[in-house]
Amino acid sequence: MFDNKYVLDFDEALMLIESFFRVEITQLKLMSQFRNSAGYWSIKHGFRDVVILISSDRGGLNVEVNIGNREINFFEFEPLMKNAEVASEKNIRFALDVVKRFVDRFNAINAAS
Image (cartoon, rainbow, N blue to C red; front, side, top):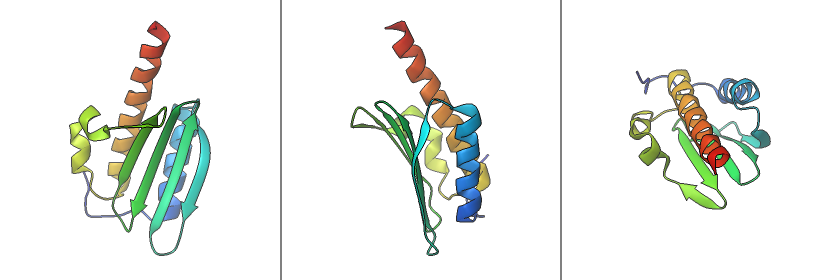
């Protein structure tokens, strides 16, 4: 289910994430993007009070979700995220699917309010 061996190149990782948001989570727009040759990169998408930051620090995979300046414990929402240790294609795709489920649930809760 997870691949903690093969890390994606930062350009490939950013392209994968950006294309996913453009197709699957269209309401969240690109806010910023960063990359450097040392292997650090990040990409931030958001809309209104929701901000999703996906980043890598020399191969590791990090996902931060903030709603109204409050950080959400993403591992609590999906405990299996703890197994996605590196920024491999498989792990990034898993993280993106979890982000989509989170955003869909958040939208459903807000629509019901």
